[in-house]
Length: 141
Image (cartoon, rainbow, N blue to C red; front, side, top):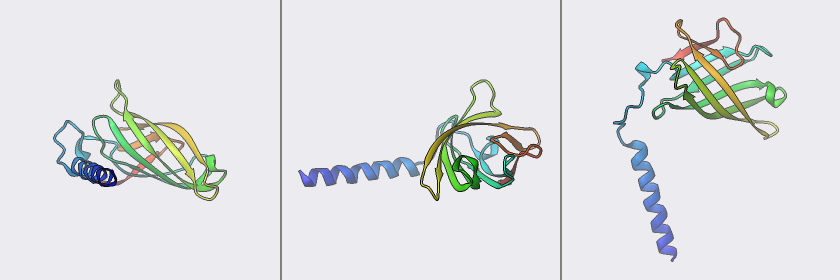
């Protein structure tokens, strides 16, 4: 029985890595044609702290999202990290709805938040509690 469980775990790990490293042949967007993908920076409109936002290339309309801030208001002024996923709106390709978990580093508290981000013609993002203008400015790519 123990060998069966270990064997099943090994097969599961191999299958997971095979899917993770397989070439993407679906209609998933690439960085070149997906305006949200990249690294962004902004200033928090509530407290003036620096914010960093990473949006990755996902599958279809889904994007992984990571948000770093040295002073999260939701964490009562503590640094924190938000992570989750964003989905491109079906009726507006320049709008994503993000659902994130905020982890407060000092207290270890975890909170949930929903955020909307809008891509604009000047290659900036609006929304997410950032000082606007200029909004979220692209760092990369």
